[in-house]
Length: 419
Length: 115
Image (cartoon, rainbow over all chains, first blue to last red; front, top):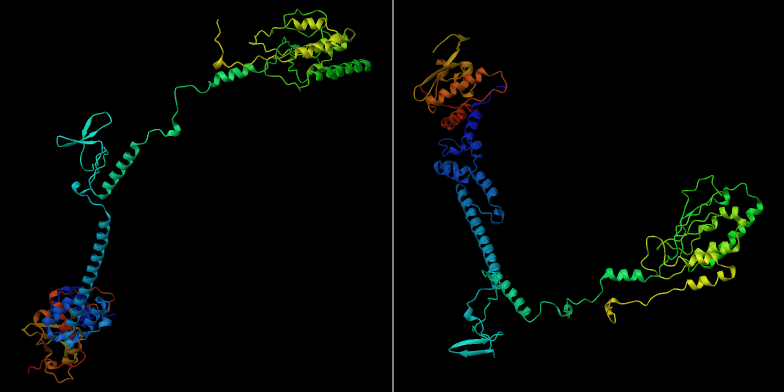
């Protein structure tokens, strides 16, 4: 590999400084073809040709290359010069025509834009002099006085009336261009149309807003509550639950049989009064130890009666309000303890008395005291002690009739109470 | 001028420019140019061949200086690869292009025939 030839070296050097070449002197076209081909500007080529006219005859291809590069539609025109050294003129002609065309299309675009703008401008509202607006028709309330029109206002006074439309209803929209004028006009039109209207729609007008139409809910609820039939009347007794016959192991078959019979009777009794019974048995087995099944009297009564030494039948207890469930089987029928032991003492009366507390006197007693004593405790013990099987049944139904006072409307009482 | 030669030919040759500058270069180096080789060929009938002097009427001293420099650049790097280019100042490049084209031409050129 030998070093490059002097020619190639110089060619490279020339191309490096090509922008400063103005003249090729005695060089022939073939000698500097490689350099001339690298010229970018047709203007430069033109200058070289001017300075070295001889080369112009040979630069045809160069000019053709320029035309192809710069003028996109040269094929449609396809100019050729009269003599081969005039190709630069061809190029110039092409260029001129192209410029003219660009100018024309630009002008067209501008006109189109103008047209659009003018169309838009025609649709926008313009601000006009107020004097050109139409005048309002004559108002009957308006009176001419001392050369000035006066309008009779609501208050009775006279206000100067302007003869033209005014758009000063108090809106703050500034009127700078057509759009804002329209906005303002819209607002004022809305205001004016609202003048004849009331602020509150007719459907929402009410005679006297402060007037009470409904009773306070709290009072109503309380009244409802009190008007309901109360369940609890009798004394509340706490009963200690005794172990059932399941845990017994020392009883004989006969005792078991009798116990079952008693249970069934009790059940029959209780089911009879089912619809009206609102009793609930509260029984505790706290004091009941597993071993003391039938030996001690476990019933305790808090009704104000003294606890009797003899084993009393377990009386069912009655709960306070709200826990009544007539269909609920009373656990009292399961209490077989004292019945076993004292079955000899038990008689029908005792059974009945056992059933006695099941009856309910449904007189609404209010207010219920916390001491669990009702207003009619005396009736029960009396009935318990002096009940007979025959008279057992009729009295309960009587007691269970509902006694309700007529509902009182606190707002429409006939006469206020004297006391 | 005349120096020790091999087989009758001097080792060095003289290149003379149009404005009288003379450059002594190795024959071997100068014969890189085909034109010079032919001019200095003893078999040819050129007067230069006898005296081993080449005169160039179209090439001035400055350009011929660059040409001589190129001869040595070429001779020095004749066996090397990818040598960096020789530096050529822009004001000379066009004329040098002309000279290079002249010197490297394949046609036998009847350049100078000063007798």
